[in-house]
Amino acid sequence: MSKLLQGEELEKRCIELGVDIQGGPRTQSVSGNSPRASDFELQRRLLEAERSVRESRLWLIALISALASVLSAAVALVALYYGRS
Image 1: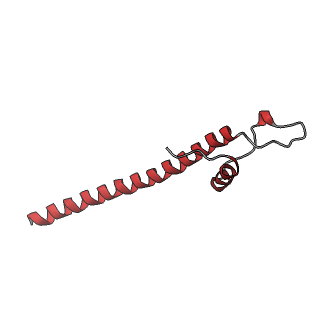
Image 2 (image 1 turned 180 degrees about the horizontal axis):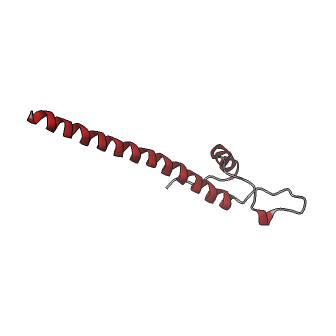
Image 3 (image 1 turned 180 degrees about the vertical axis):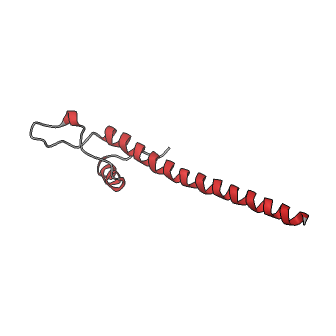
């Protein structure tokens, strides 16, 4: 398992993935300015965002694999059909 990021590195990585770095609604001040979320919260959000990116890539790989299987089966049927003629 890789080391969890902290501080400025954590903020930069969160911004790269489009993760909200502000505190939740419960931590907002009266002035409306919300402080930065804790490192623990940002790490949780970052891990969830990275997991989502991985899952979307795996979904694409699974789809391509399924299409390749269908194409392979179609080619095999065509080969059988023309092989018997």
